[in-house]
Amino acid sequence: MLHLCMLTNSLIRMEIHTFFLQLLTILLAARFFAEIAVRFQFPAVIGELFAGILLGPSLLGWIDINEAIRLSAEFGIILLLFEVGLKTEIERLTLAGGKSLIVACAGFFLPLILGFAVSYYLFKLSLLVSLFIGGTLTATSIGITIRVLMDLNRDQSAEGNLVLGAAVIDDIWGVVMLALLYEFAFNGNVSLISVGKIILFVGLFFVIAPVTAKLMAVVIKRLENKSKIPGLIPTTIFSLVLFYAWLAHNMGVPLLLGGFAAGLALSRGFFLPYGSLYTCDLYFPGHVEKEMKPIIQLFTPVFFVLVGLSLNLKEIDWSSSYIWLLSLSLFVVAVVGKVLSALMIKETLRTRWAVGIAMVARGEVGLIFAELGRKSDLFNNEVYASMIFVIALSTLFPPFALRWFYGRYFDEKLNDR
Image (cartoon, rainbow, N blue to C red; front, side, top):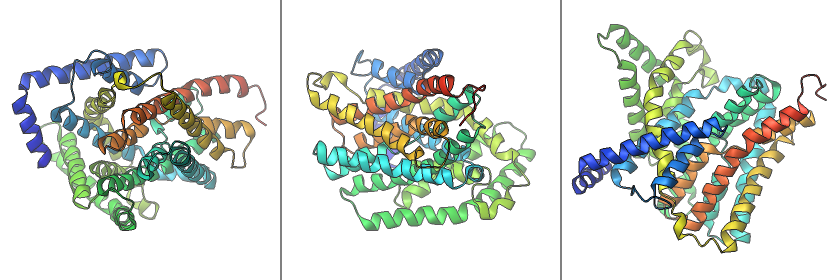
């Protein structure tokens, strides 16, 4: 309700047609630069981020952030996390077994600890800021990683299954970590009560979500068969996402965790003890994804453009060594933390290096962490800029590194030993 009041006031102060002009500019710029990024073999998110930098105070200064744009970006975040949850297939973990768990655990805790230590002890940042930085570095982008492996025809390989399994666990832990950091930022301190409350919510959801998801799927499918007009799936699923987001907020956790929860509940065989509920219908999650894709693709670029709009490069003292040292240190942590995690498993050295490089990509999940840190007033402009640089570099690193690595060391004619 508060968001709606703020949106109404924002639109009253600003002509509605002005907001329409801003929104169309954001959408078209995001699409244009995403297309260019992909043509140069960069992830699309890099182009969308650049669109925000171009339109915002860093360069052209055409668009100022207002509540209407911010609310549109909120839809983008929630839908993005819904898509991540929907694509999560827990049964894939069994293909890689305990090795994925080892990579995920090490890949989560090493960047968290190293990022916190560098920020807190070396750069003398506060406890909460250092925790946010460490939390941001835990992320792994499934979308970017799997896309690169698919391009290289390695997504069904041994290392591909390892990476996918580890990234699934990383995503789940990352979202829980995001919820914890959100609570810490809201309260202004680290509280064990807050940790317990969020863990309780997640635990309860993991128990009830498979059953409720099956019931919802049955109802929605029957309604779709009886409906005389198209569009029932997008309407009901989007409403479901909004309901889960509202429920999450009322339970004291971030709205976006509700989006992730809704997607996870509708994913294929998400909770193994209830797997039999899903074996009779593997079609529905794919159908939901197909129907929701246009809505997700419409709103999510607004969030990434907002990240760029929030960054003012003109206010940064580029002559200061602080921002360069911070960015370089955190980038090293971002790469080393993930690569070391893969070196802990028993596999061929080439496979371990491939897994480690693939896990480096932060992408959209890292940007969500960084934006939350900025919105909470924990990140000043210099720290926020450093985090954006680190996320961008760690997003660009895996596609090029993996292409070079596979071309040099994974020639099919060579014996992989």
